[in-house]
Image 1 (cartoon, helix red, strand yellow):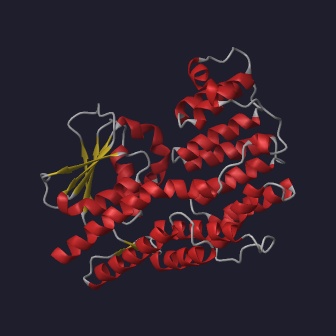
Image 2 (spheres, one colour):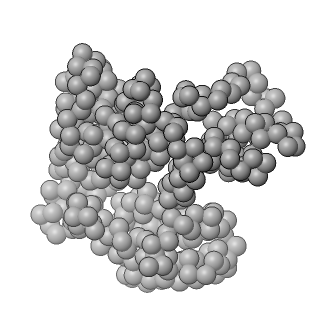
Image 3 (spheres, helix red, strand yellow):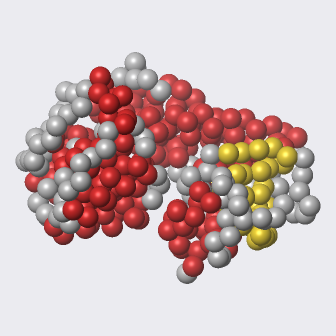
Length: 369
């Protein structure tokens, strides 16, 4: 048992490293296309010297472009709720303002609200169905959700509309095809760094999905193509270690298969969901959401009051790995705290649902089914 606990602790540290690093990996690869990179109408650009000014500026009433620019400024600095507010103001002035719908969708994606993001992309495409950047960005949203076939279709449409002239779209298409196990396009056979980056990002996605052996193979191919690729060597080490951890846990029966049949290091630690925001059925919905991902939800409760602002994960010292997985699975949770124990012996991890998760309820809507 002690050996398994040590292995789980090592894995927890590794997963924490990768969870911090993975965002930069996928953004480094490609991502969204801005409207001004496409055939869409141009827009003003902001220099860094205007940061202080833009931080206090207010858009003039009745000008959708001004609201869009302010929203774009907020979005570029990670202030997504403020960005969405400005984009919505632009749409209220001009309901056919396509770039504002796209802006809302991109911010929702960054907040983990992928289904709502897709609704915004689709609304934009109903207004103007011939914009390459909309298909690319919708494809990227699908890529983040690991819906690779749909992502590839969207990228193919974007590539067709752009005439193959936007390299970011081509990169995204190559990544989606790689994730599907297809051969990457042969248009650029001499660009080894480009191919290495495709292998690297495919490896990172497989690592995130618990497909550690496949991840190790992709990291190795990335290193062979570009020995200096940042993070690839460390990724190989991480994938190898996690493959060994999985093997060890499988041997002593601590490994659980998730709903897709992939290996997931979830263990059988009991998870309690406690409603701390007062939203009806919130604990039930979050619990159902976690159950679908293979977690052992054993208890639903109400907290001592409903005024908790921030959601948190509490855990016993021997359940740190499960706590990390729970934190990673629930969009929006940033706080974790180790505790001595809980009032029920079958609870090793407790999720306190705060007010900050109320706006993200759509992410747990499968719990209502």
